[in-house]
Length: 609
Figure 1 (tube, rainbow, N blue to C red):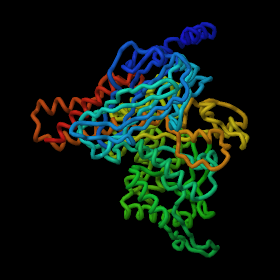
Figure 2: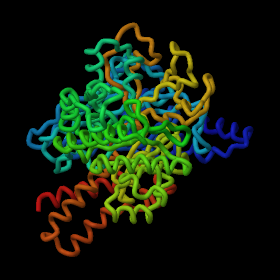
Figure 3: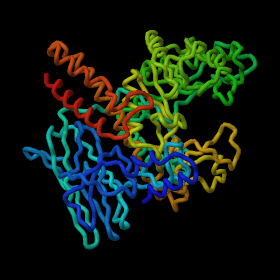
Figure 4: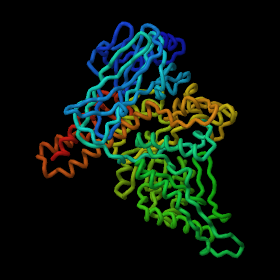
């Protein structure tokens, strides 16, 4: 019925959106579970589907929810309840999982989250439709009421312990409400290998501590640290590295007093690394973050929109004092990173998306960095351009601007490639938007592997409000009620709403108690995660599976026949049923999951040789 209503709206507006509603509302996926009744329909589906509130029950039946994962890996599936009458006081609880020989996975390793919907009133692009779209995954803290005739998915996430035995585990998920009880079977297959703590694919994502402290009303230092640890745990669990993993513990820099008589060679900074080193050690060793951003004072910066000129300690860049101070700072930073073994993780990101008019300015900055700190990575959010060659050694274009042949030429010079998505590109590319298919972010990582790209970047993860669209400091955006990422900056006037896209810059949400930034007191919970956050994790883990298989093939090549090598090597290729090109890819998670399963079994076999 809803699809017919949308198509009628299409006839009235002239927009051809009917075909785009099919996957979201009517795609044939999922399996009806044995515990399903006329009172409450129960079914399950892959985590890669975005399940509409009105999708009919599937016709296919299945015996159990099925999840497959390596040791030390988290994977999820969706359990969906669709009552025909009001269902009051529903609880959903997972039990212990039991395998062969008495092996168990504790119930504590099975987490059930509620899938919450946001109301998209302004579609991101012509491929999308308005309506309720699933995205936030708040904790299921207590009984909930379900309305009749509507789907309510639950996110069932299993974290397989590092020491779990390989094999199949079975358990129950119990649903209980007023005058209702049901048990659903959950089956988990554990692959016979361990997923490491630190991923190969580099990640670099923005994060605003200010938004967290503002929305959750955190004014005390101890509360800020307590909550920040919970955010970092979520980043770590999803293999995402924030730009700055030590926002409360920056290193301190002391300069000599500047006088008219000071000599250039006297302008040497004194660094106090104590707090920063401790925080960074924890970020890298405990959380497994694999990148961090460095800011260089005096370098200048900006973007295609506007820029600011270099200046340090009041000296312009054409003075000997500036040059001496700048070089001393950069060299001191570089050598400390070298002593800690962190040069590979560090990168300087000082200018964003330059236009051709900025290239000369950008190259001047890179020339200074190469002289002062040649061993620190220099990243630029731009595609390869002849007038920028010799500047960055990490190129990071927006995904649609990546060109493989120029990239291959730069790789010969030891340069690396990341890429990013943000407000663009939009359909038909892989994107980060709420009102797009669930597979897109996961496919993006397969495209990343396919093109030999080393890392991914996104400008922000908790962009909860826009200072332009919501200029009243006391009334910021509620991201649960308004899912749009509205433009801010770039000379956007106060009160002007210019859309960037639903969910742009927002993969995590504030706790529900702090949704409007007006809680009664400090909210000490961590973030509410999202379906798209989960899809990023799955894609990064897919990339890691491919990396592990590639490494094993190199290590075990002498133990394999030519036929075996050929068969296993073929698994490193990305099949067309996952992604044929940048704009042709699956919206069905099944091909991804099937390929991942084949790769996992190959890894398990090769690991035993």
